[in-house]
Every structure is written in structure tokens, then in C-alpha cells.
Length: 448
Ligand code: PFF
Picture 1 (cartoon, rainbow, N blue to C red):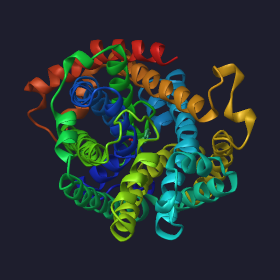
Picture 2: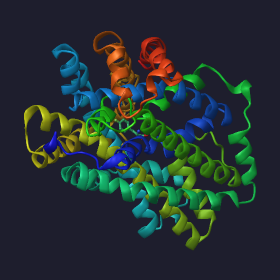
Picture 3: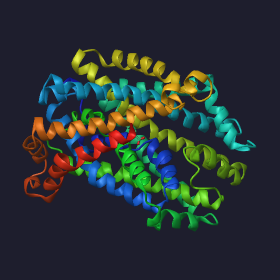
Picture 4: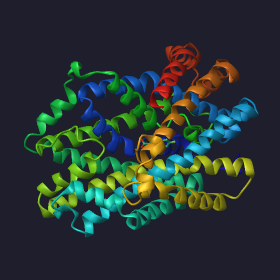
């Protein structure tokens, strides 16, 4: 255990896990999905999904990691058997695949940051065509993805304490400061209140199956659940830490950041008279237009702060996605961290190339005939989303039927003396045994 590395104190773990949770999905995916699904109603359903289904799964995942003090594969084999180890290994592979495309999107944020600062992005005549032309340029995107992955690998190669913990201690507060600054600005704009109303006053006639499906899928992704990322971080947590308390903070922090991202974006969108249902491009097409309207100087400052914010949010998520497979090779194959991390980075970088080419540079990857003519990025995002929900479902079955709920209780009792008599215990056990496996099973089938 000593040479695996450990977080220093509660805060190190909470910040790293919160960093993993807070990411592009909070600032990019949550607002556009809320915009497409009626604003406030989406927010309410999303909150329900987070607390009803995701919170218990998170606790279960971190508890398994801490109980086993091992990577995801090692945890399943140690507490279960070799066959269960396949679930952990599936998670390790998913981590690699998610990072291969997530890093490309993170690269876009970096590219846009550089473009706003140095290339007059805000003077473009048409932001939509500019965005599509930007993502179709293979060389630019390869360079951006390379830089982003290099920074990620550098942090992970330095280990838990010096790399991951230190990066999160700087990035998380910086993110909050930029976000609050942008909210203050957006709320002062004319017409901002219309956006606030759209976001906070629910219209229940807008609820349909799609709203629930989108909210559930997003809530699972945003908390980084199901593939063992939090299990790996859990393996570095001290036995005296209260896992329920830590998980509540991570969940609340992630939810608050998503909420604040909506509070920043909808006033901006409404004050610019843009449709909130613009879709995935909301951030990259609508936001530059809004920054342009702010005038050359303020637009440049606010615009670059915004894209920097996105990059800051993405980095700790990338770090946790790389730590997941790295821990597997370090623990199971006894390889040195430096070697593992840089080799993984090379593989992930190469795996990301089809994603980059799928945005217009190559016809082969832009239209996949075997996947309803959708692009490779959509394909890989969909299959990895399924791996998250299938992984979460199997993890609940593992706790209920192999590891046993009594062992989970025992783990959660450490650092929390009132746990056995608490209502929280009843709620977690009931959710993990009955509610979550059923919901996640249904969701996995629906995504496919
Ligand atoms: N939670 C991250 C986000 O919200 O963008 C994405 C993510 C990170 C998913 C780590 C899964 C994971 F293991």
C-alpha cells in the first residue's frame, strides 16, 4: 500500500474525485440537454436521478475500491473471483476508450481558447461554419489533442500526491472563480431574467421519455460511475474517512457546478436572442456569437475565460480516466508508473485519431455505414456510455450477490460510527440491491 501512493487527508480525495466528476458534461453537455429538454423540468429530473440512482452507486464503487485497496480489476478479483475480474477489466478498457474521444473534445476547448486569444475567433462572420471547419482540420485537432494528453499524462506520471492531488487543488478553485465571474456578468445583461425563468420555472408539459432518458444517461456519466474510476481513487483513501460524507460532497459539488453552468449559459443565450435548443454545438457556436456582441475587448477577456474554464473542467476528468488503466498496469503487472503512463498516453493518442478524422476530415470515419451513418465520435461515445451503465449494473449485482451487502455495511461503518442505525444505510442497501440494477439494466438496453 505504501508504494501505491495515497491521498493526503480527506480533502485530497474529495478534490480529485470531484475533479473527475466535474467535466465537459457539466458545462457543455448539461446546458445543451437542459436547453433541448425544457430547462427547469430537465433540471428537476436530473437532480432526482443523481440522488436516487447515482449517489448509492457512487458509494458502492468507492467502498469496493477502499475495501480491496486495489485497481478496478484487482478489486473485483480480490473481493469476488477471477470471473468478476472481467468486469473490472471491462472498466479499464472503457477508461482508455472514453479518454481517447474525451481528450479530443477537450482539445477543442484548448483550440478555441487559443483562437479567442490569438486568432480573432470572435471576428468570424459565421460561427457555425467556423466551428465545423475547425473540427474538420485534422492537423490542428491532432496538435490540440496531443497537448491536452501530454498535460494529463504529465500530471498522472507524477503520482497521486504530487501530480493528481496538486493539479486538482489548483484547478477546482480556479474553475469556481471563473464560473462565478461569468455568472455575475451574464445576470447583468438585458433580457437575462428570461433565461433565468426558462431555467428555474418548470413546465411539466415538456416531460417525455426522452427527457428522462437523457437525464439518467447524463447523470451517470457526469459522476464518472460504473467503470471503476472512482473505485481506483477509493483505493487510495484512508480507512478512517467517512465515505458517505465524502460521496455527498462529491455529488453536491458536481451538481452545483452543473447548476451554475446552466445559470451562466441561459441568461447569455436569452439575452442574445438565441434558441436554447441549439444542441451539442451550443457552447462552440452560440457562445462565440455572444462574446462577439460584448465588444472586442470584453469579448476577448470573457470568451477566453470561458474556454479556459472548459479546459480546466476537462483536465481532472482526463486525469482520472488515465489513472484508471494506469493503476491496473501498476498493480497487476508491477510496471513502473512512468513507463505505464507514457505508453498508455501513446496508445490513447493513436486511438483518438479516428475520432479526430470523424469530424469531416475523412469520409470513412464521418459516416459509419454499420452505425446508421453516424460519425465515429458518436459511435464511441454511445458504446462507452453503455459500458458505464452496464458496469454500474454489474457492480450492484456484485455487491448484492457476491461481495454481499453486509461487507458493504462493514466498509461504510469505518469512519462513520452511526452508519448501522441510519436511514442512509437502508436507502443505500435498498437502492443497490433492487432499484439501481433494474434502472441501469433498462437504460443500457435503451442506449443500444
Ligand atoms: N465525469 C466526467 C464529465 O462529467 O465530463 C466524464 C468522465 C470522467 C466519465 C471519468 C467517466 C470517467 F471515468
